[in-house]
Length: 118
Image 1: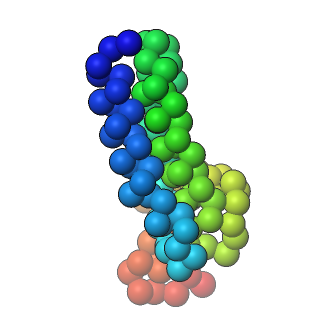
Image 2: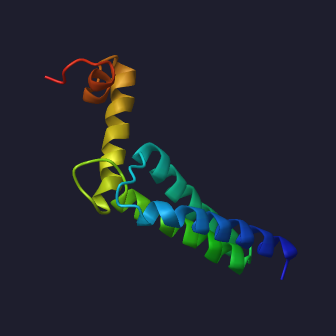
């Protein structure tokens, strides 16, 4: 076993400990723009560590990805809970990208600027 494997595991365990209060707090509202990328990065790190033979790091990163997944599903602002939030984020991201390319404002842009989304 490489010592680096234990260092990465320790970092992941700390992340899990620090994320646990957010998962438990029913009033927490973590934007999908923060939580979905963090969840994705954790999953990518887990796969990467696993392919390098760093089992402990992979398990730690999988734990971090799981915590962020719970935050995505249950602590994001919005009308619904669950895995559908990932798809809601992806659709919103696609709409914003389309609006940027075509120069048309999205509903999110109208709300952010204080105008009605009518």
